[in-house]
Length: 125
Image (cartoon, rainbow, N blue to C red; front, side):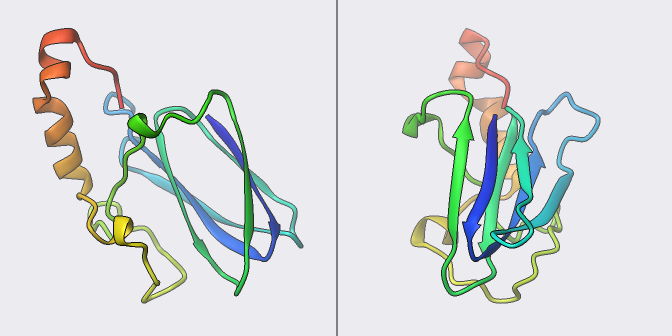
């Protein structure tokens, strides 16, 4: 998991439950984190995390329970209609990486059909 805070500017921070066996699978929670409100959000293991910057400049800090592993990183389309995240920005400026991510149903299909999942047990999202 990770603990997230914003120490300069502001962000709208979102966590999405990706635990396929969870009763809250596919549900999201979001709130504004800012230097002014000093709120923090804990994102548990098995959740996706993303944010939209609400100010010209924002500084976001994480405290993680493990080391960063680029190979374990994944993403979901920010505007996935199944998730229906109520982003406070209508037309965000997206990185090239964030412009072409799969929907949650596509991601689950890929996960369920992966050889690692079928033959080695895989790991839960």
